[in-house]
Image 1 (cartoon, rainbow, N blue to C red):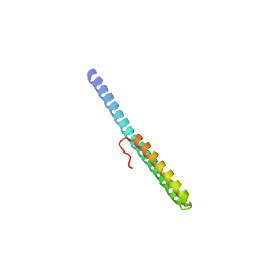
Image 2: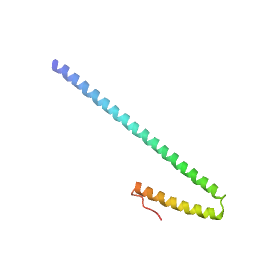
Image 3: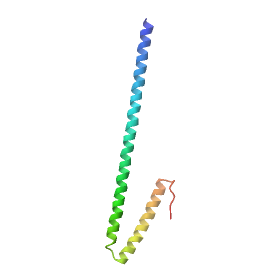
Image 4: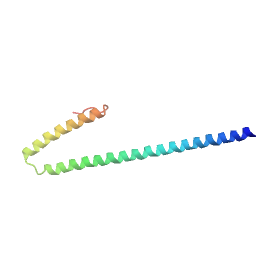
Length: 98
């Protein structure tokens, strides 16, 4: 009788630990997906800000003289090369496209 009682207590303890472990795994999985969604939204916001900056530069470009436009193109080319270099260092799988 004592063995059955001890065995039942041991089984209940084992199943409750396994259940709490499963719930912890579910919470971690949910947290991971939430963090992933937040990172995706941050990336989308960053990309929209970049696009907004590009569009603003295009608008400003119409107001420039010919010499200013040439200087602007030169500066943009340098910035694009620097950005590509920085991105290629951050992600070695991306090759520089010239």
